[in-house]
Length: 86
Image (cartoon, rainbow, N blue to C red):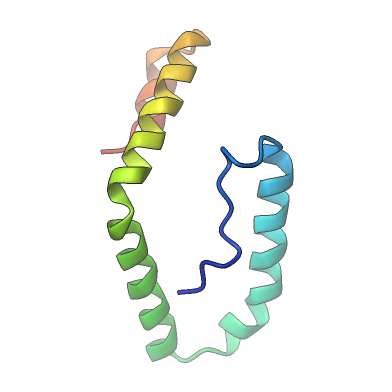
């Protein structure tokens, strides 16, 4: 899995720019993905799942920080529930 373009939001507080860049990379990758075989797409999905699992602890710590920030901002319980990763 290619992680060279991965960027931590903590490292770049301009969240809009991060999201825009992610969208641009996804759009650029779309033609390649459209031409990929089922085997290639399945492999890519498996690699993405492995990457998520390998960083699960880090992701959950970041989610906890997000939840604290949202709670401090006074968001309602339904919003908190949607944000909570399990």
